Image 1 (spheres, rainbow, N blue to C red):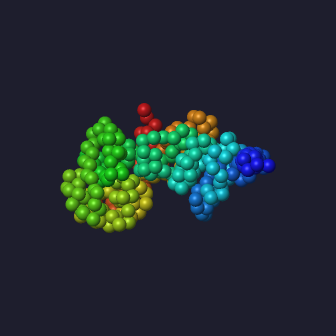
Image 2: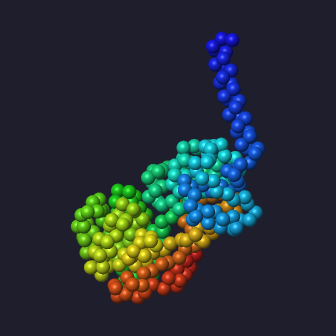
Image 3: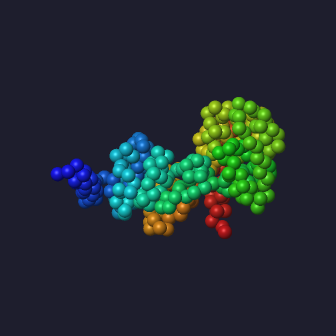
Length: 309
């Protein structure tokens, strides 16, 4: 047999072997062929607890978790799979293959999506935002600080794209957005300038600006001016900001449950959890001479406002 014939047989064998492997994978129904498949790069206790909670919430479905490293290419997953990604490595893996199954990306921030997707939005991928909605945060300010009119907003190159949306939401509420770019976090002058021209600071969920290195300067500077900081998230409230809206595991399970009740073709391109909570920092409120935030009452008022057209 000539060399060319042997080479032809070799390629035919390789293709046949791949096809046979794919058929075997589909017929033997391994763990990753579950109806609802969750995956992440890390398989920690929190991930397992979330998977178990979703399985309890949807007893009629087959729910399973498989570490990302154990999955084939997205296009090799059974077409009926509904895929839920729990971290950014999972999204990076999914974006490598545009033939994968319908996918829900859980707890991704607007900035993270912008950095990975730009202004595009791949088909069959739905994003469930983790950062608090800008409109909701503005309404929180209006509820707990009704005298505040000038909303100071620090932004950087990554978060600048949020400013037009923020202004759009603020205008009907009679609020003025006072933006201040902060490129060098070692230089406090932009922050000090913003504090002098604002009634309250609204933190954007931008880790370049709000992080362990900047938290002390941000909070001490705002305290010195007797100016509250709202947001950017629940974690920052524990560190010393006044209040924020947030969604917890129960809220994420609720939005997943509602989405999974519908065909993937009807999933929205992106969505915030409908249910949420408010967290306040009583010590900060006392220090600033502000009435303590009634978390349940404020959350109820905000939720009622969102129900009205």
